[in-house]
Every structure is written in C-alpha cells, then in structure tokens.
Length: 358
Image 1 (cartoon, rainbow, N blue to C red):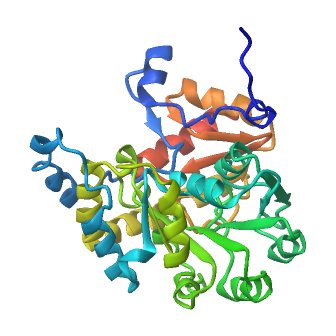
Image 2: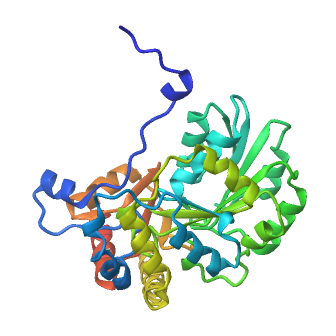
Image 3: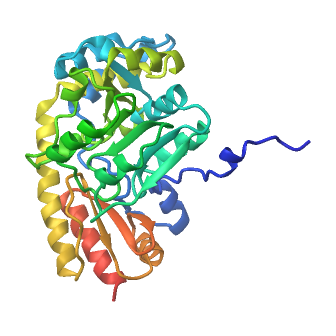
C-alpha cells in the first residue's frame, strides 16, 4: 500500500552531518583522522562536566527532571531573568522545531537568510510553513531586506548571529534598527550558538530585548564552547508568555539527566571557557594567515570556524582532504568551512590543503 506523505515533507532532504571519524577510518583504512567539520571544541568538554557525570550513572533507571529545575535556575541566574523565561532543548535545534510547531499554521511565514543554518528551513517546512529566504549581502544578514520581506503572514524572523556557515556578525546598532522596525507580533529568533566565541565589542545584547518584554527568544547551546555536543543540550531565553506556549508542545523529558548534570557543571567552569576562547583566537589567526598564504581570502569570522572559497570544485577538494585524513565541511559550490582545532590540527589541515591543491 502506498504511503500518503505530505508534499512539504517530500520536498525535504535529510540533514547530512559532518562525517564521523570512525566512518572515514573504516572507509579508507586510516589510523589518524582529524575532524574539523562540525564546529566542536577541540579541547573537549569541561573537566567539571566530566567529573559531574561520575555520580549520575547509578540513577539512569530514573526519568530526568522533566522541568530541568536546577539547570534552568542556574541559567536564569546567569542572565538575570526568571526561571519561567528559560526553556531547555535536546540541543538548541529542538527549540527551533518547537517554535515552528507552536507558532506556524500552514502557510504562515518565517523570514531568514538564504545562506544560513539549514535546520531553519527544514523545521519551518516540516511544520507546513513557508520559509522566506533573503539573500546575504557581503556574506552577512541583510536586515533591512528581511524587514521588507515581512508580510501579514510572518510569524517568525530568524537571525543567526554569528552566522553559520559564514561566521559573520550583525552588530548591535543594526539589531537595534531591526527591533525598531519589526512588528510587535513577529517573534524574533536570535540563534547565538557561537556567542561565547565572539570577540567583537559591538556584539548585541539580545537578552536585553527579552527583558524589555519584546517578542523574542535567544538560543544558546552547550554543544560548542562547552564541549557537550554528544549529550545534546541547549536552551532559550524568552518571555514567560512565549515559554508557556513552547512548553505546550515540548516533549516530556526532552533534556536527559546526564546532559542536565554536565551542563550545570560546565556553566560554572569559566576557566574552561576562557581557555577555549584563547585556543580559538590563536587558531583563528593561525588558520586565517595560513589560508592567505595559500592565496585564499577567508571571510572574517566571529565564531570557531572559517568559511572560504577554494576557487575550484569544492566537493573535489573536500574528498581529496578526506584521503589525507582531514574532515572539513563542503557547504556548496566552491565554498568550504573549516573548524578551528588545536595548533597541531590546524597545521595538519593547512599542510594537507596545500598538498591537494598542487
């Protein structure tokens, strides 16, 4: 019997993550593989998070705290908001799905950049909404054009800042203009997965808009600088009204007990965050200069990755790097994205890239 599948679902392609290390080792028989594809912290998780997990294994037969009280309380204290303004997700990706399910009726619109995190369009389409794609300008969100794209059917406007995959940042002044022009009934979604890596002094304080009572949500994650990607835990800071709606569609026990315990410990490990920022800053300089030495012009990034044009078939360069034991990300056409690793990993990447370009 034929399946009855909605055309919106059929229009989607499955998300393709960065290639796993063990998969490449199996395929090519390699013993040393360096993964610089998924914007993970090369230092690994916070030592405090690892230690916190040790006492959690004997309670794995119990369901986790469905409300995530201790973690939500700690996050609320960190950002000086109330606990009812914090929502947890199985990664911040899940919260994007909750937003789409909660606020989009069939045909409702979500405005976003055309070259940004692919999950936005996937979640909106899966909820039978319409993704309104606005081209980037100089690899950066064109906020004025995004405002012009708003219609009476617009329910969400999504800003990835810093943007993935370009690494570019929208400064505070531009966000202020955006918030002055967006209709009050449109929810502005700030996806700030790379917030902790930002070095630019003009990065916006978007949580301030939430505190003002604006219809906004700020998404953060423990997958990047906190090094907990394997546990899948993220959060949103929003108004209590929006949070109440999200909780109506949030699955029970969506944040597992190990993730909650590790995230709580990681949140308090400022030393690990500072060390990770320092390693990333040095690595950005190393890789950026190395790419320039190879004749490339990397796009200035405020994240933990660099986006650059290899000026030839990007897929071919990506596959050649795989044979050298280096996993990066081929985004489209001639564009590659490389995560910043530790110094020796960055050196290996630059050496391999120079080799495959000969």
